[in-house]
Length: 369
Image 1: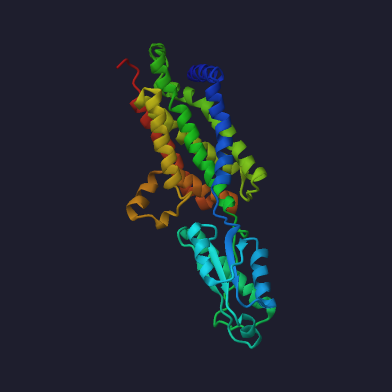
Image 2 (image 1 turned 90 degrees about the horizontal axis):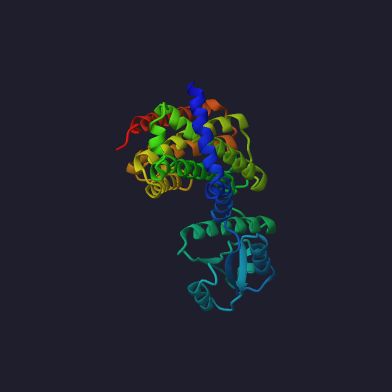
């Protein structure tokens, strides 16, 4: 009998969704649009750094160094000024972010075995770009030294780094898994935040209250169609991440989808709780966005390393469910870890979903207030 009532509520909610083109578009198109926009807009890979080169040596070695700078693919040389003084105009106007100055005697120092110096000025107004540009220049100078077979001072410790999980250091590989968590957080909470509030605004809640429906049956029935939508969106997002953006999926797909279902349950429960408390669609949608998007974007470890945050904020991140889901997705996508590695995060997501679901049941009252 209980299952029949839940199915009736789910069927009713499904009809409402199918009759509302806006809800359908938001449910199926928004995740795709957001994934595409964020995947292309958010990147830490920096190419085509504008640069100017002042070559006062004008030798074959200095020209080879400048050529290696261009061929690296990281720098786009926009000019070759004749004097050091001309560099200021390019950096001040933003036409160049890096100035490389090869002094006279550069080739002579190389041929006689002395250390050849190159002056570099980097625009530090964008600290991230400046740091990356410095790293690129250091690597290029090292490669140039090896190519010409110049003298090298061997360090006491020969450090040879290997990058695991993301050897190409593509920012998209760790951004896309986090994006899936971010998008799912917003979409499921936003969709369900309108359900109960919509019933109150349309005056149909009185009819539901007068039926033999129990509170858990009503909430579960409202949740079922959105859970199906969220699950389809998750599958589409995973397929886009792997097939369109080329993000490796090294872990178990079954575990990924199973834990996605746990995360969706918690997000849907939170949206329904908001809808119960707010009672108006306008307030409910605003509360859903503020309570899901900002925490998931800023405090989940998706964009900013949690360990670098102030201690007070680090404590706050423990109540953000997206924190655990982002960690799980990166473990499954990039590391291919077994379930035992992130079982703790999975347990916390389960506890969160059950707790919010219980609070939503407690807050909903079958009476006219």
